[in-house]
Structure formats: structure tokens, C-alpha cells
Length: 181
Ligand code: SAM
Image (cartoon, rainbow, N blue to C red; front, side, top):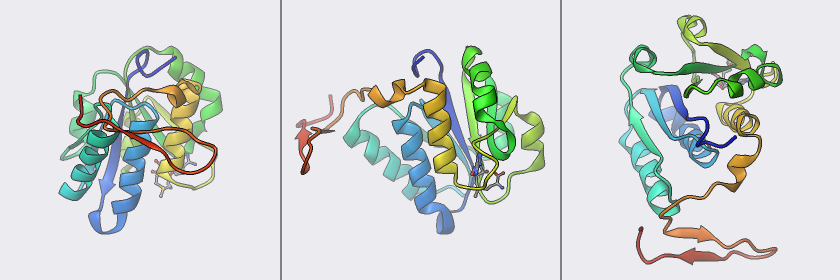
């Protein structure tokens, strides 16, 4: 199962530029790297966040995009697929991930910020816990996508990359393409 067999779009709720700049950036980088097609965010619109994700994709390839959505209700209403909400209060992901994977419809994976409105729990098809302990939206999303895609996301190729790492046991080596193709 790869990201081509099961489309994932991430929705980050309640972004606050002053407090969440780094964590939202890291969440979106994890989404892009581990197989999500694109992402939406709600909260306060943040041109710096949008630009930093655009730059990463321009350099490192693929066609991941980030879009501001005024409110989660509109995104839910327009979504043609199923909704997975990551929350420590949900069902253990190891118990539900097979059901989620075997459902072929696209998945909107919702991750919270400071406070998730109670209605989100009722509107989701699955409320999924990556353990019942509080940690972070970044770790929850990364583990969930890893389990969903069963490791195939680690071998993803990012087309049109300007920069590619050449793996080495020691040191850093980058291959640079002159321009994005
Ligand atoms: N009390 C929150 C909750 O419902 O999971 C923790 C808030 S945490 C700062 C922000 C987001 O990280 C949550 O909305 C959720 O998406 C994600 N998260 C944190 N711990 C999680 C866990 N154990 N399982 C799934 N998601 C988690």
C-alpha cells in the first residue's frame, strides 16, 4: 500500500503563528515526507508558513501544497472521502489501522492544536489514538502514516527535486540539479 493507493490530505487545526510556527512547519514537513498529498490549515493565516513549505517543495521535490482554510467545517463539508482524527482519546491505532487501510476512499487526517472543538470528534469517521499518552501532532502523524503505508512511504521518490541527498556513512553529500524539472 502506497500513497498512490490511498490518498491522504492533512488538516492542521488552529494554527497560531506566534506559538506554533515551528511545530506547524514540522508537522507539514512530516506530512509531505511521509506520503500526504497536500494539506490545509485553519487558525490564523500565516504567509511565512506557506512560503516555507513552498520553498521546501521547490528544493526537495514532489508537488505537496499547503492551503489556508477559513474553518474546519467547510473542509469537512467539502471532503469526498473519510475523516481520521488523531487524538489521544481515540481508539488505539494498532486496532483500527487495518480497517482504515482497507477502506479505499481518500482520507482527511485531522490533527489538533491547542483546543479541538468537541464537534470534530463526532464528525470524524475514526478517532485514533497513537497511545493514550499526550505527545505531539508531529509524532502522532508520522507514526500513523508509517503504519497506514506499512513502511512504503520511506522509499518515496520526490520528482523534480533540485536537491537530493546522496546517502553516506559519514559526512554530507548533496546532488544539485541546476533547475527544477
Ligand atoms: N489533548 C490533546 C489530544 O486530544 O490528543 C493533546 C493535544 S496535542 C498538543 C495536539 C495534537 O496532537 C492533538 O490534537 C492530536 O492531534 C495530537 N496528539 C497528541 N497526542 C496524541 C496521541 N497520543 N494520539 C493521537 N494524537 C495525538
